[in-house]
Figure 1 (cartoon, rainbow, N blue to C red):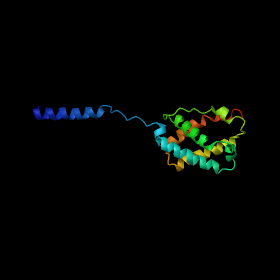
Figure 2: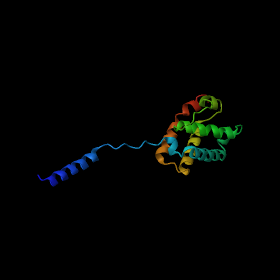
Figure 3: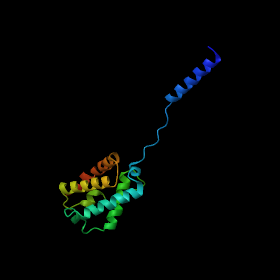
Length: 146
């Protein structure tokens, strides 16, 4: 085999082997980042809050609430649940919702409002479903003392 052929074979082998090497995959962004970070979570909570205000069946649960505190707490909770930099400092869900008389119909209405909010805010299906799944885990605590 001539020197030129050997160099071609070596170059082809090097090219083939370089294709076999694993390339590091970029880290998957957190759910928080996929929701748009701080600005995205704030927009989601604002949209969701307006939807609640427009629903006569659920707005009654917020009649005596400090809306600014509710918004800040919900932003913090969504940030925390979506692996953002926040730590939820509000009350446990069972205590926050105790004796409110929330039914499954009310809870389902809230879920529908959140789902439509996420759709309207342009959150893709994967992150949307992950957030809804994480929020769904709160159902037992929210409904525990009803």
